Amino acid sequence: MKFLKLFFLALLMAPLASAQHGPVNPAEHEVMEVIETMFDGMRALDADMVASTFAEGATLKSSGSQDGVPFVRSTPMSGFVNAIRGSQDGPAWDERIWNVDIHVVNDLATATMDYAFFAGQQFSHCGSNTFQLARHSDGAWKTIALADTRVMSGCKLDTNDLEETLVRAALRHYLRGHATGQGSEHEQAFHEIANLYWVTDDGLTTRSSEEYIAGASGQPAGNEAERSRWIDWVDISGNAAIAKITLDYPGAYFTDYMQLLKIDGEWKIVNKIFHIDRD
Image 1 (tube, helix red, strand yellow):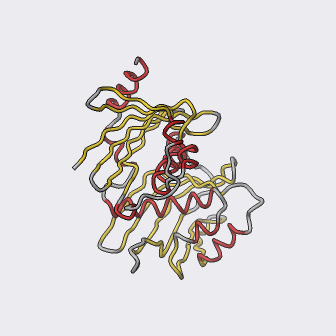
Image 2 (image 1 turned 135 degrees about the vertical axis):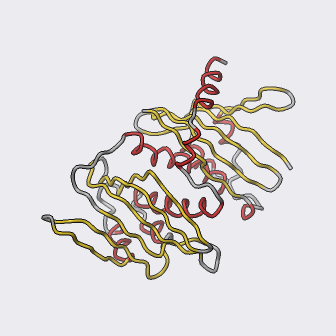
Image 3 (image 1 turned 120 degrees about the vertical axis):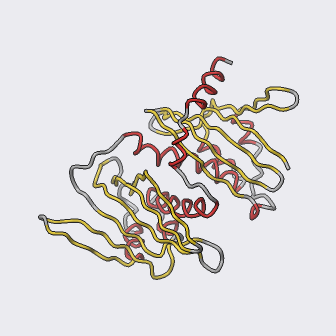
């Protein structure tokens, strides 16, 4: 019970400004998902996952300077994808992002962010990204152009900013577990000691993460197309983090609060509390 009290206190102390970490309307959630899927694919060196986020004919432009002379380089997105495909034996392409700002106007979207790029554990460079995305005839958002700046030295990096990408990656395993019904996704999100807590008419109820994972259906829900879910915000201090997640389902609206710790180099959910509003 003492642990629960500390958890609730941490949630109350979470700054309202934390909402800036994520998108704030349905279209922005969808755009953010495309962007984060691309970076997940880069970290996994999964060229097909990366390619799935881009429209045909998309381009990558990079700006920087060499010996004090500015340059702009243009690469077909197919070339970028093929470079990932040819790096299967190399270190992960680990790009961490923060200060994400998304604007959607009708069926076009622009997203800007700061980033730092690591080859495995080795820092390479920093800069900013600008994505342009369009909604296509099937309703899916795809990146039509990506531009970045590249700064090779003098980067001032904040540890909590760098960790945000990895916290969100752990939380996306949780979201994908809901989307696919696969317990293996939830297993990657939760630490083995994690518990879930909620309140019913009978009072406080709890379930272990092991029981929760074992209850996975193994397949998407029949009405998955009508369901949406997203990360509202993340707040990090060192090796501890809290996050708010929303699951908007037909007839039920879930609000999850997650508590995460970085354990042996990996972020894991160690506790979840939630509330359900039913129609």
